[in-house]
Image (cartoon, rainbow, N blue to C red; front, side, top):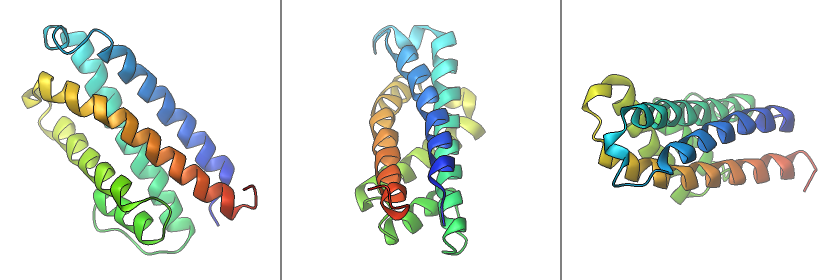
Length: 144
């Protein structure tokens, strides 16, 4: 059974990443592409926020004995199939894994304007993932 403490710990780490993304985006869409330091800050923290979300999802999938996802994105499909998260959240998080892969493997080719848009949307998507996951774990642990 998935432990609430583990989910809470991982969620707090992810929320810290989201705050650093938010700070990097605060300059606005027009100025963001001119600031290499902020582009790198947002890209790095977005990569890690998505990766840590995958890790959190993988813990749940493993702890519950649901099998082994074939890809990072499939982790979220497993969670959706077992009603941990909604299908909408799973689809958004799958898109996040594609952004993570782009940052990790083609870092120099990431368009700052597209990164700004994706990271801006990604904050809410990851927050929704954390809320749904937290609700599910809390309910299963008898806390809700």
